[in-house]
Amino acid sequence: MTDSVVGIGSRLAGAPRDVRESGYAWTRLFAALLLSSIGGVGMWSVIVALPAIQAEFGVARSAASLPYAATMICFGFGGILMGRLSDRLGIMMPAVGGTVALGLGYALASQVTTLGQFIAAQGLLVGVASSATFAPLIADISLWFTRRRGMAVAIIASGSYVAGTIWPPVVQRFIESAGWRATYLGIAVFCVATMLPLTLALRRRSPLTEPATASFAMASRSPLPLGMSPAALQTVLVIAGLSCCVAMSMPQVHIVAYCHDLGHGAARGAQMLSLMFGFGVVSRLASGWICDRIGGRRTLLLGSSLQALALTLFLPFKGLASLYIVSALFGLFQGGIVPAYAVIVREFFPAQEAGVRVSTVLMATVFGMALGGWVTGVIFDITGSYQTAFLNGILWNLLNLGIAAALLMRPARPVARI
Image: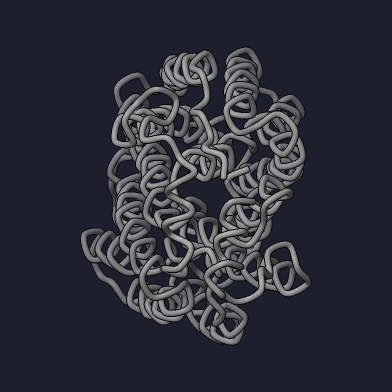
């Protein structure tokens, strides 16, 4: 109903023809998916390089986890900055700037001489630059679809998982053959050469961001979404995003190191990470289809419940074959959680705030990944085992599950009729 009101407002105000769900919208979606899949290397290359970084700089596992934590923290803050810029200027400028900064970050990281310098290059450049290819792109795509918004958001959110599927084995192969420094330099060249041309597909801005439609969009929304103030709902979603991804980070961030410690080898761990994200793509697409039918809140509850189950399965199984199976199940079960947040935001907040609202919630998810990745390293250093870390993840997942259930029990906001 809200989107119908916006469409009426656009026509009455003489706005450009509605191009949502058009051929152009789908072309834009798949260009953005390619950008997200390539730019997503910023989140995953450092995971694969963790054993090599630890060995070269001679640090503990917790210290070797800091580059990833710094990357994700800067990724989160960068997402808010890029989201605000995209709300004001459109998505193309953040995408171009992020591409250039990503190449520069990888090039500089390949030349560092200390762990501190590596953390700075990973966080301040690679982390911030990569953020332009995640939350801002998801928010932008949500403006181009109505009936199939859940599927569109799921497709673009799958970009990070496509990156997680493709990049870990590729990066691991090049690290083994050429070393992590040469690998990082190669990533810099590849990203700039492939991503800059793709940004040209993002030049057009969505009609939903035009000032003429603002009054109609605002008129159709209750000031108390789900019976809460906008700030309260945003805060609840931030906590939910943080908690689910602290839980999610344990297997995703440490599966390579976990397999190495169990004697299966880092290469096997990289394969499991790739398998995890491959099934995550399937999960995200399926969740998009589900989300269009049952809504964002129910999809969040379903995904949180399945992720808790998958985390529990890691506890009793340590064999190579069983870890492959559990990794695949984990990817299949948890992929729908993050896209559900973007759909919930679009259900209960104005389109003109999509960039910053979605980016803020997804910032919390990457903070959760950063916190979970670092805390897991600390727990490992203290206990010498990952078993306690899995239990820690399960507890955080239960917090997310409780929030998802509480949101579902609250009545949806009334919709004004024109």
